Image 1: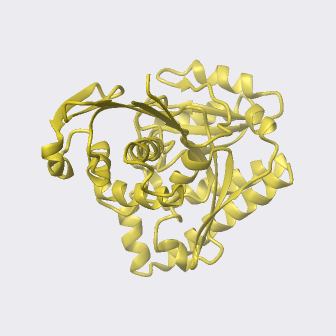
Image 2: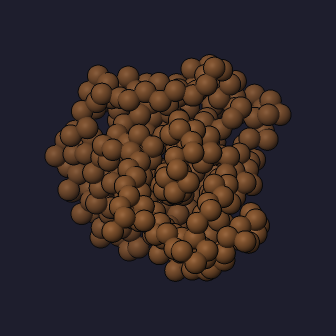
Length: 337
């Protein structure tokens, strides 16, 4: 049997960092806004009849083998740690060869590891006979990934891989709810340029330090988080109204607040790319994920995306990404040929 799955990563437009439990509980109305992009993470599982388990990452060029009798050892395995811990969690009873890969650049800040987690969960769940309902996938992914990164994981990154398209994720005391946003996705594609800086993300926002400051009741930090929440709320409203001038204004207002939250969210190279883009038709910039490298999303003037991309491509080390809105989330297929 062969099982193949895919899940898209995301670009976060507004609301990042507030999605970590329990921080959002202190900011009523907490919300994040993001959209799924067609740089899919993929997982392929082919069953074997010899009891062997082969785990392989095409991106990292890592492959190793074990067997079902040593399944418990995967809990402490450091090679391909996320995949290993997911396999340990599902405890399959048949041998298999799992191959994982992602089209997003390493350290891009696009939630690629979260997309890979959802893709692997979808495939492994199918392998063990659909043990869990898909509604459980977000919780499983966040909990397992937290044991890998050893700090609390934010939740927003798992919804685009599972559902695709454009989302507002609402964080409330009674749970997390994903709202599908009915927006002008054609205009979003025409307006947004995504540039990989060539510098893998080095965590410009240290989520653990911010987490501790927040729990300790840092008043200044609370104020910043309220602004993050408000920016995400305003972004949702602007997108639903198809008001791109307001989208640009929200992005411009949010940018300095994120810099205040974490001065290292941008590197000198990223600052240079933002300056070049703004001089060639970009209206605003959004550092993807935690920053400190990775990708930047640029909102462009109508008809100017090509100009912005051309200017960015001329910068040494920068890579303009080709993308579309991923309208579907997790897809799992199997065959017996």
